[in-house]
Image (cartoon, rainbow, N blue to C red; front, top):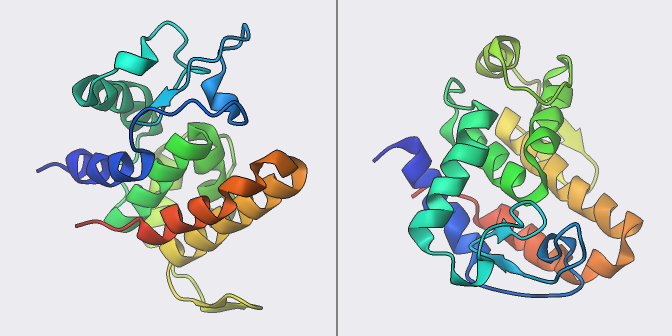
Amino acid sequence: MTLFDRCIAVILRSEGGYQCDPDDIGNWTRDGQLKGTNYGIAARYFPDIDIKNLTVDEAKDIYYKSFWKPMNLEGIRDELLVLHVFDHGVNAGKRTSIRMLQRILDVKADGICGPRTTTVANTLVLRHKVINGYGLLKTLCDYFIYERKRYYADLTMRRPVTKKYLKGWYNRVDRCKLD
């Protein structure tokens, strides 16, 4: 089983099936049609797809071609970190996720996971960092997880209508583990 197969299994468990919540901007096409999301594939970004009738295999193909390949994470050795960056890319945007990683790594935050990002991710020795109220961050992945949760908290402050999703987003991060 490839790393993509292992990661996509986790993501599909988090994303679930069809939903059509009008408060979720991903459910709306850019021209104002409420079409929903299925297996995490959102009408906003894939307006020409029949979201409601999307199959799991079609969703996996979209994830591979539109997320996995463009994110270029396979050179990163920490598989749990790869899962979190990929999962966050699916949930918050590919470039958003990679920029978050790049800011942690203190490399140019251009949203493209190239050789510099991969090299630093594979060689960084993270000094233990205590963050008030969160505890000790021992690994790069711990730091990324912390930043993911902070991202969601900040999002709910900017868009209060999303507050109803915060607990689910936190649970998603906590359940993001490879089998």
